[in-house]
Image 1: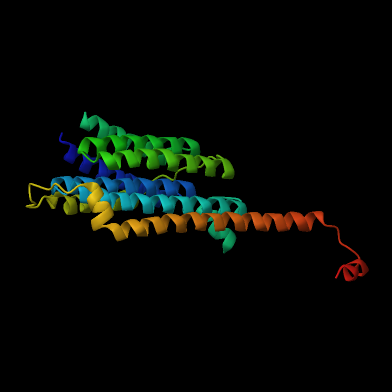
Image 2: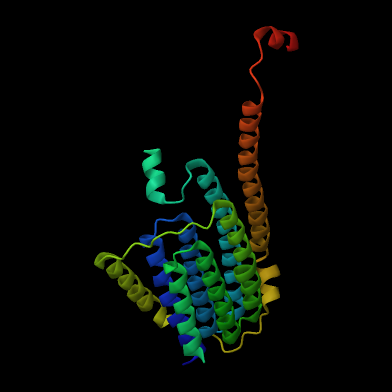
Length: 101
Length: 173
């Protein structure tokens, strides 16, 4: 199997797993983990597309931007998670909605 | 080798989602990041692989473990997926395959542009935006956490301070 095909194969399945985690789980921290996995899949796809089109440097620079934005999203998401836990006492999204409603 | 790497990434990813403890899920995610970095290196994107290894497997894992120590490593039960959920996921993957398979175009076979040239010259404005994003993220987190500390300090102060008689209050004013 070539590295490009392996990259595509991994990215498709990682995105599916991330989507499953995003829809099926109701825990805030696991939602962040699922988002991380989807971003990794997008990054892999960018690099594979860049390699196939002989534009690997451009693809890497875009992927670095994605990585920075994703890390900031994780940092802010974790800070919100800590605040939600201290405010509501739980990280379950359903319970938070019920408490608020 | 590549097929083993791909299967290992997918397996660890599924373990990260289906693990019942938060710390285990975080550690599985760290393994996914390390394996993705290996795959990126094999693809020739070694600069990105190093950044992914240090940021994805290092920094994010440390931050998540720190957050778990603050909120507690509570157990959670993943919901069993319904048929519709699996249908949506399979449909999304199929759509993605349809979109990404014809990626190959007639690009120039010679492309000697270096990453540093693209990152700091061609996309220099994006680099500045990234730095601004980092500072905004750090300031946002500091704001959120300091708000929490301020509220806690006020609560503690109200709890410890005994109710003074009105005459004492007037004297103080």
